[in-house]
Image (cartoon, rainbow, N blue to C red; front, side):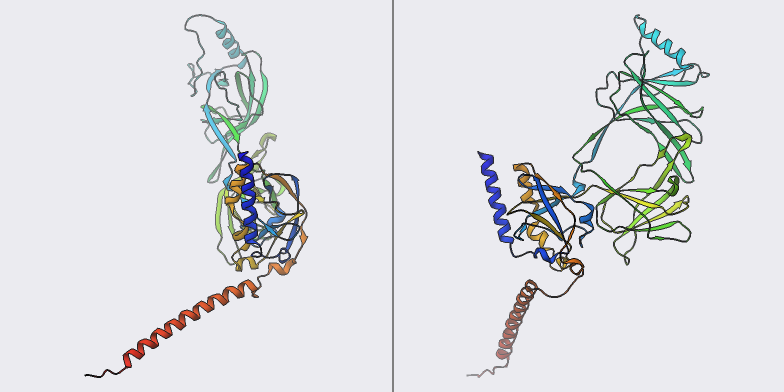
Amino acid sequence: MRLGVTRLALAALAAGYAAAAAGQVPDRDEYAWHFPLDIVAPGEFQALDVPFEVYRSVTDPELRDLGVYNAAGRAVPRTFERPEEQVEMLETRAPLGVLPLYGEISEAALRLQLLMQIDEPGTSLKFQSELPEPADPQLQLRALIVDLREHDDRISALEFSGSGAPGGFIGTVIIEDGYDLANWAPLAQGMLADLAYEEARIEQKRIDVDRQPGDYLRVTWRGMPSGWRPESMTAIRRELGPAAEREWLEIPPVERSEDGRSFIYALDGYPPVDRVDLAFPGGRGVVRASVEVRDGPEDEWRQRHDDMFYRIAPSGNELVSSPAVLKPTRSTQWRVQLRSGQVDGDLRLRLGWRPDRLLFLAQGEAPFSLASGRARDQLEQFPQDRQMGDGALFSMLEQAGEPGLATIGARRIGAGERALTEVRRWGWRTVLVWTGLLAAVGLVGFLVWALLREERARQTTPTIDP
């Protein structure tokens, strides 16, 4: 009963809100583009992720020239949830107990099994978070046994620290699991690396795990130098939050310097880019690069990232750098400058983002449509955002119920390209505003003139002595 009353009150509030704003926002046909909206699941309000085509159809990077209209052509309340306000992924870490096996693996495993079968006071296996030194320095480390019996959390990855190999290393690590120390099953395999490259280092310390392992892990390796020695292992548990799915776009350069060390890219739209990667010509390469952005050709370049990008395949296994993490950036011009390394051909730029989420109130009759692209919105201080973009309304609606689901169709032409050009022709709203301002200035000027005239008359009036 209380929930029904709350919903009724919110509906009345939203209706009054829309009615008060009616006539204060531009008509739908004043916008360059229209997108049909289809409601596929009802709810207190509707939600959808903004596609890239919408980012290409606005004049304002913050999407303030976007409006939602019903079948009668009336604007309805809408707002956006920013992707930077969403939690993408949480990580928890826990050290693991490790038991080293020295000498031949088969002999060491046999000794380990016999030791576990001995039921004598004081007999135990010592799993330690730090790898101990061997009693006999002539013995070589062949494998690690990891105890997971007291580790209840789901493991998403294993991280190795320490090497002891001069000049770095690269090699393959094989991870097996089991519930005793006699039977093992393949669990995961990956590459670990710590390589020096000019003034930078290429590091790969993690191996992903696809399923929950058993009580024990056996870790072996191949292709490692003789001095390689892992010092500890850490279990990583990743927990996904309510993040939207990330979209990716790969674009070629529009300009390249003569020495092949600087590339400029044009992004036709304003998505909130928060990941950057490089696609090498031929699929392989190692560079240190600076990633920069600017908003227009007259603006200064601003650095967003400077680090190593690589994709190599030693021993047939690929070693790939992770995409660079950025603060969400809505820029249309990007530049990559190579600090070290060289590429033979065009370096393509890969941009990733989590879409903004559009929320709107389905007031009135369907069909609904999204209108976008009107340069005059900036001159009019973004009437869609001022009149129809109250986020507090949607915060209350979210507390009352879950949003419905809407889908968006292909872009259609509205006012077209002429709406994207900043036209300084005055509309009736602008005329009224300036008329009011000029009238107020005139009234103030008249009052000042009247006061000055009265004061001047008082000073020039002669006085008569009695």
